[in-house]
Every structure is written in structure tokens, then in C-alpha cells.
Image (cartoon, rainbow, N blue to C red; front, side):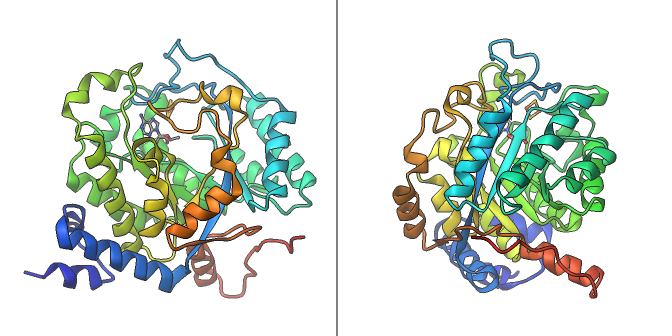
Length: 375
Ligand code: 5AD
Ligand code: FES
């Protein structure tokens, strides 16, 4: 049998190897983290990129069984930020040299919604002279919509698969056509075909989820050849159907630790992708995101959602930074990130190196769309 240190030196991993990595404790766990930190520094360096997160609307057509803003949760006050509020947050990001923003919302696909996002994209490009990068996270849409938004200026898209095991996916979603695994997979393929840098991810430590499921999730990311991954611990929410299964859950600390091992293992499996330090880590441990940055992640998403709306965007319990200035205090962020041995890539889009490598391999003559020269 391979020793643990032999396993983590590899560049290809079997499901069994990954299970051993996810179950590592004691010295093995330390070895895994040290190796992931080393591979990250060698491959992509120690820079961390900021994405200002703007949760611009919590109106959602979906009813995912784990999510606090699901359509059936009538306790949530639904909101839609105004264009002026959204553009102010973008201006803040640009002026503070964040490089890019993420526009995230509940999932709607009405023509009005599609047009609104389109118009916002154009306005954001205009206000920042094309300098601010824009990632969208607005759920499953038609390929035509994805193409339209891509043309209007979005260049990255986040759509988590939530679980790559179709049976588990079905268990955590209602049984209807709005929540089909195959549809979600097709949306990810459409995003790739529409020339986005594509990000996906899963929740870690859900009821009914096994370690083998998580190992297969990592291999799924590799097989889909994604450019970015964001994954964090599952955190139960009282106003959701999955809450009744809370007795099946590992402790929050165990879910947190498993999430760190997922990040470190993924860094070894896909050394050149962008990996986000998920906000849900911070809901369990105040220094959670920085811990993830140290052992493999390279993206952080400070919340720029206008404060009044934040309490209505509670996907899970104990979501941090409901009224937040410390989060955005530049000195604090710099100090925390410095402690993790990383430095901030101000004013940089921080594109996934993987996307660049992928595009060059597909078409060696093609120019890679890069960030315009900034101020
Ligand atoms: N715990 C952790 N993450 C959650 N999300 C939704 N609900 C929860 C929860 N209870 C995540 C999903 C979704 C992202 C926007 O938030 O993975 O894709
Ligand atoms: Fe699907 Fe919120 S309703 S993630």
C-alpha cells in the first residue's frame, strides 16, 4: 500500500487516494496542508484576489431543500437592490482596487430579469472604463442568455453543482423539472461553450453525503475541467426542509475541517485553478477563510451588499458580517491575509491560470482576452 506521503506527491489521484486525503488526521493532515501550500505557491504564487460580492436580489424561483432564501420560506422579506445601489457598490470596489465583482442573486429567468442583468453589465463596464471584471452567479439560464451576458461584459460564471452524485442531488432538491441534475450539468456545459471562465462547487457535510461522494466531487471538477471552484461547509437553516435531518450531521467543526481538506486536496488535483475561500467557512470559524487561503485557496469575496439587505440574504444560519465595516477595513483584511502568508492582488482580475492554459491548448493562435491596462 502507498504511504500517505507518496500519495500526496502524485499528480493523478484515484478515488481511494482522495478518500485517504479527506480522512487524514494528525501528521498526515499536516502533510496534506503543507504540500497543498507548496503546490499553490509553485503553480500560481501567493496572491489573493478580491471579488466584491453584491447579492443584488433574493427573489428566487427555486426551492432547494437546504437554502434559507428558497421560494417557500415566507419569513424572508424579498428585495431587489436598485441600479444605483448596485452601481455604488461596484464603484466602491473599483475605487478600492478590488479588480472585480460578483453579482449574485436568486434564480429568475424572466425576460425582465435577463434584460436587467444585461443593462447592469453594460453600466458597470461604463463606470469603470471596462476595468472592473464581472462574475455572474444567477443560476441556470438558457444558452442564449448566457451568450448575451457574456457579450455584455461578464467573463466568469459561478454555478455550483451542489453534489455530483445525481441521487444525492435529487435528495436535496424537490422532485420537479426546475430542479433536475441533468439540467444543471447542461447549464455548466453551456457556460463553457459560451466562453466563460466557469466555476462550480459543492456543499460539504450535507446529510446523506459520504466521503466517497466528496472524493467523486473532486474528480468531477477535474473531469469537467472547470476554471474555478467555491465550496464550503453545509450549514443547517431552521426554515428549510433539510433541518429535520440535523441529527445526521457531523459537528460544525468537523464539517469545517473536512472543507479545509477538500480545498487542500483540490489544490493538489488541479494546481492552476482559482479556489475561493467560501464565506460559509467564516460562519463556523472567524478566521476560517484565511485558514483556507493558507492551505490552497486564492480568492476571497468580501461582501459589498448594501447592509440593509444582508439579513434577508441568509442562505444559512450565522452568516457573518450582517453589519459590516470591519470586513472592509483595508488594514484588517491586509493583516489577516498577510498572516496567512499571502499578498493581495490589488487592481487585478486574477483570472484563472487554468482558463488561460485551456484556451491556449484549444487554439494556440488565439489571443487570450486579458484585463485592460488599469489606472
Ligand atoms: N449551507 C451552506 N451553503 C449553502 N448554500 C445554500 N444554502 C446553503 C446552506 N444551508 C450555497 C449553495 C449555493 C450558494 C449560493 O450557497 O451551494 O450554490
Ligand atoms: Fe436554490 Fe437558494 S433556492 S440555492
